Length: 197
Image 1: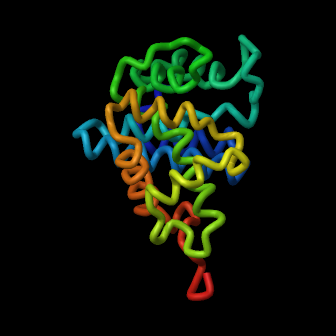
Image 2: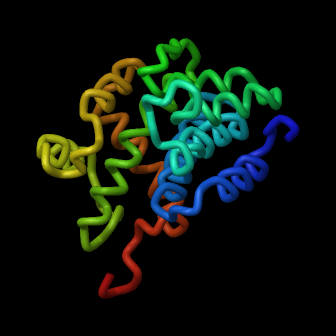
């Protein structure tokens, strides 16, 4: 397989490896947040999109985080390293998994880590609101973050650390991620289906 250099190539690989609609939607949500931040910071949108789309591409096939050979995200990191995909993308994907110990020393890596858990949490918030993402505020998301039982698998510590590493206020970061997902809300299924929504 040649290096992944375009968003379309990354999406094709994601579709090949991921059959779960919810996992695929998560990767698309993270991609939306990555592209939003890339545009805001004047970075290459295609490479940031690739990192977002593929960060969890191996999770369905290799969900075991403790498997030092094939566990997530080691398999996708090995594949992208082997085919010569841009090292910045590979390191960002490795860096989003703190247990690998790969330093997040690029803006791409810090952003991927910062938007990963938060994107999932915002999607979860939308799922329990009649209006979906319409009118969702940082204040509402912060309130849900304080409820340990809600979306319990989401690491609140990682969300806080992500914003801190980005150097942005958590409310501002949440607002940016909401805006990013709202812009692709139809594709992500975050808007009400109709007037009865």
